[in-house]
Length: 186
Image (cartoon, rainbow, N blue to C red; front, side, top):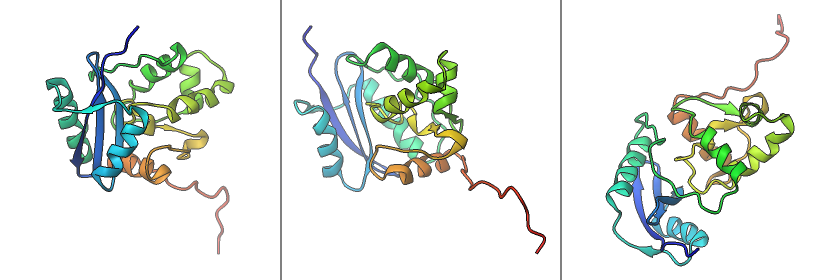
């Protein structure tokens, strides 16, 4: 089956320069913010080298407006954004569908997501793999999926776990260091 051509655009948000790619079905890639448009374009085109820079469709324009509002601090729900996840295996699609249910400021862990999908704790690593390969980070909110003990865990986007923490802080999620088990009287 021949894939439909990819299009992309780069745009500025309060968090930096983001990029989005789409085809006739829906959004196929999303690039989290970088410090300049060239870096964003380079990262986006690394995944879809044949994409052409074009004006966004009305649906993509709506998604871009939502991303801009998100990085300005407005609670946004991306669950109605049309995606094209063609090429993803069924297990990853199930993981992504479950992650899309997480709302603004809501987090879960890799293990809890595995359990919600009917798998044991050994599937937590698979959940982590899916999050690392998420083609549309933010729209599928992989930043809301944490390591065991609500630790930040990894993040494969520019800025790594610092970017993940910033996005969570934007949503009002505070990941404080664990409290000491024993308090000193002195």
